[in-house]
Length: 162
Image (tube, rainbow, N blue to C red):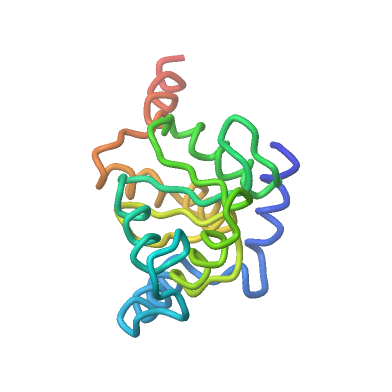
């Protein structure tokens, strides 16, 4: 297990970072219904611009760096979890390249940290929640809803054959 995954696991164990995915979804929905925090206008951090990015693909990640070169351990952990499940077709946005987008995505989700993962336009959470979903099997189910078969299902079949 990588250092970043272990760090996420520790974070998932307590404090504000352990808030459930359902709880985050409720926060995100409440922010959307109220128009979110700031973020008017037409720049890269505007609510409309962020909404377009979030809805542009079934799996979207706002992270520090790129999947090929994550620039923080938590972003790296999200990339690794997606790789474990065989999810390679997703949109990643490097918030370090655009300060307006970095603040805009935080306003949009009403969540203060990066990375942020969206499935089918819906805010899931960050490293801690994605790790929790990976561990309890929810990520396999959520990916299935998107028409994505988790590679872990195939790995389990291979183990059963041995």
